[in-house]
Amino acid sequence: MFNNRRLYKDTAVLAMSAILLALCSVLLLTGCPAIKGQQNISGHSRGQIDLFLKGADDTSVDILFDLTAVDIMAEDGTYREITSTPLNIKSIAVKGRQILLAEKTLPEGRYKKLRLVVKRALIRRKGRMARLALPSGGIEIPINITVYKDQNTSLFLTWDADASVADKYLFNAVKGQVPELSSLLVYVTNEDSNNVSVINRQSGEVVATVRVGRRPRGIAAGLRRDRLRVYVANSGSNSISVIDPTTNKVEQEIPIRFGSAPEGIAVARGPSGEDLIFVTDYGSDTVSVVDGATYQEIDKVDVGNGPIAVAVDPPAETVTASRFLSLEDLNILRNYRERYFNVYVVNKDSRDVSVLRMDLQRRRLEEVVRLSVEWSPVALAIDYQRGKVYVANYGSNRLSVIDIIKVIKGDEKGAVSDISDVGTSVTGVVVDPSFDRLYLLREVPGEIMIIRPFSEDYYTADTVMPLVIGTIPVGTSPRSIIMDPEARNLYVVNRGSDNVSVVDKTAREVERVIPVGKKPYGIAMFPY
Image (cartoon, rainbow, N blue to C red; front, top):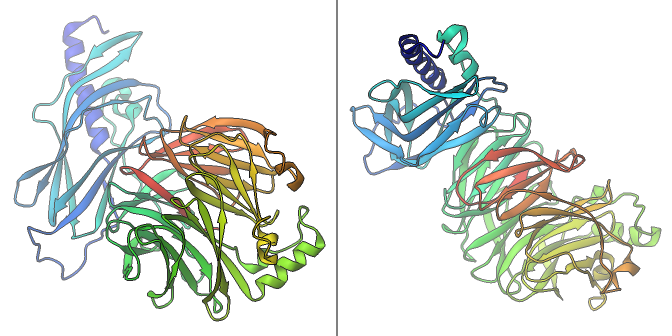
């Protein structure tokens, strides 16, 4: 009984010990396996560590504790602090969820122990909160990991609150499961963490963290099925990191020599099936073209001022029958794609879009067309079913619509129209042709706006408000949005809240929130 002081004290000590042991019982490492011959550790070289905590999928016990610090012990016995940010952790709140406890750079070397410093622990029973006794000296967890230079080590803890207080506070050991890597992965760039979070779409959890260049922003998945790669534009180090998704390691760092401050990135399929990479260089008003087979920068294209986003025509085989295009327009598109493909570049500071006509066989630029749009364009999406490109204008309440067929015909003046009254601060666009919907991501107030596109004649009426289907609240300052290949869920990168919202587009609600690194920016996944 809780009103028995001695029984309470004895059981409380056992309870908290069991809780903390259960919390600490699972620790595992991914992303940085031991490498033979790499034992000469330099005290000046540093790697990165991320520490995650996941609650049980179900729990009936209401327990909370205040975590004030986490330290890690090196092989020589010295401790280094990896976080001193206080966290209030509740068993109900973390049920089935994964949270990021700490992110820190550490000197290269082996580490043997974690120490969690807990200030207070409480358990709710029969409507009352009871304080639990804490072990002196913090909670120590034995580990055996090696941190390597410019690589990331991800550690995962799980806490089963029910198991930790089962059978009248007797401890039941909890064993962890190694996160399984899957082909169903999502990659998110974290600009202030200099890394990429890797999320398993099936489990909805971070399964790895990949150290890349400085200030990673744009990210794109390759198109080669026989050699999958993920490409990251590092704005701060003027390079592209190439990630091998089978190992979640950087296999190559490609320097950008012809431009500066790479921002957006997109991949097209070359004539031999190779990846052809296009990178917007915000600082030099250019686009760099990189050969995905040789990892060489093969061309530089002058565009507008402040190129920030880029998209390329999808593979030619996607030009199929369309209920939105006439047979004549469909044939024009098919004939065009036999020789060319377009690259669309959003120029934020000059308020226009550069359309690059690329010769498919020669992989060379044929022509650049500039199309004026609205204030501060920042993102775009291609809708091949309608033959349109939608441009999100951050500083305007109009969504610009580019008619691809008119661009092909050379009708540049008549190629751009607008959808009015979509609200300002739009940072992303996703096309959903199967549901005949557009999803617009708005930074303020932090929501997805769902609209139904109209016919081309409808766009000419500037005062007509589009049919708004609904809105879905997401996180703080959302920056990027993408839809999975199955067209079931939307993934939203919330830059202000350091997480990703997974949205069920049918139910129109957030079904999961996934923690990532600091100031997340871009997101990518493989289209199959």
